[in-house]
Image (tube, rainbow, N blue to C red; front, side, top):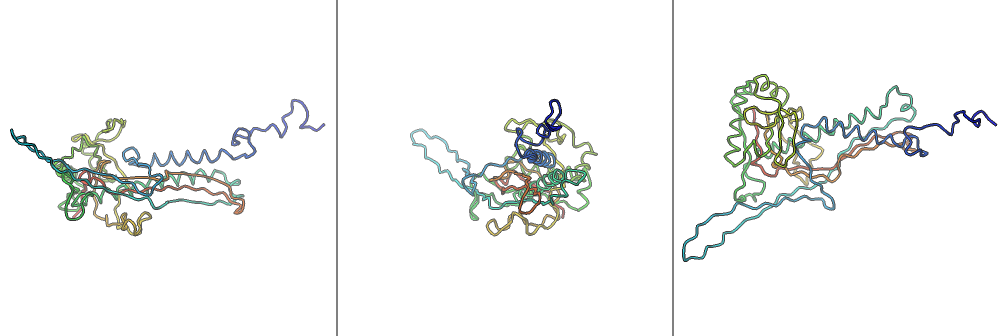
Length: 338
């Protein structure tokens, strides 16, 4: 009888493996679960738009289509005459999901076990942060493009769908105006005026104002931004967020608002006419509702960590497939430097 066979002595067969699922043979089976939680937690924490913009599923097809009906025409009833029927016009906007964006890192087998920390977890945090930044930026890009549209998305180039309009833009008189709280506040008011003239009610249609940190704190120092709770049009309650004191609209700050000339964006291709490229060097601020964008995803953020025997390495993977495009342009506005 060996020492490990003796009653009362803990033997090798009685070890507890905390990462083995249900006592299974794989001692690292549950490591992937930890990694997945890290990425999801990170992307939700890092994303400024996660709570505002929802992606519609695109499964079983490559294309998501949004149909629209134009406003109707009123008439009056004349006694003794049969009221005439009035025509109604329809149109559509579509978007295709055709690109998978990924992040992948490979770690040598030996170094994973010799590190003082779990490098796979740290990589997962970075994946989540970069995925959040990338997704937010693509949404901001399309919001800026919606605001820049002179006609609605439902125009055929020669005529527009009745009742549908383009976006709204305000250009500052001087580049320094963006640093003046009174002038910036006035520009946002002018932008909201344009939007309201297109039947958009910013405080009722879930319009959010997106600012870079510098402009955000410029208005906060001027006591134009306060903490508060907000209930969206579909009943979702957002607790302890920043809001404009005067207009009651949510305000978000983000470094992901594009500020450069973007070329060769990962989601741009010939099929979408390089829709995510553009010059945003003079973009100052954005205001838009979720209705301004049409977004769909075929693959939500998916993560995995696995050991590849052939490579003798651990792989940390994350990927997603989605697309976004302008939809209701009148629900988007932008402020630009001259």
